[in-house]
Amino acid sequence: MPEIWRKYKARIQVRDKMLGGVPKNPEVLKQWLEIKAHPKLKDPPEDLEKAEEWVESEEKKNWCGFWQNENGLYIELARWTKGMIKKCAKVLKITSTKRGSRDVIFNGLYIKPELFHLEKEKADGYLEHFGEITDARGNRRSIVSRFDYVAKPEIEFEIWVVDTNVLSKDDIEKILVLGQEKGLGAFTSQGYGKYDLLEFDLLK
Image (cartoon, rainbow, N blue to C red):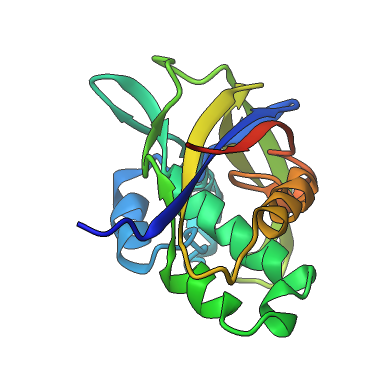
């Protein structure tokens, strides 16, 4: 069987906290699985007497954590990392200046393993994010979203790239270096999930 892959080993360590993005409420989780996106607040009830209960129920729905099975907490490493790689490659203009690179990144680059176990039975804690919603009367109300986090996880994975000489080792390393500031996990726009690239090598 012909060998079509160039394989790289990467090892990163999150500098502070990595947040989970999986809804803990079963009802919201079902919707999230269908659309692969974070849940959005539903319209508030017209009955003003029930507004307070609605806010409280929506807060409970807006609690996100990590996937969990008999081996503990785990993350969708491939999905997170592939998304980060696409965005960083675009910012670095790799996909706009290197012909065929977009096709390789989208259809010829894979992260192994797809799932990564964090070796924890439960999260190290949670953070609260305060936002605002509008009730049925048009008043602004505060609401809390909660995110479970794990502190400073070290993550090791492989990047498999179709060997067409379109993407170089230097290209991929630059993407991972920029990714240090982009971050992995939920709520990266607020600075969470930033990491240090500890190792990046071509596998023999």
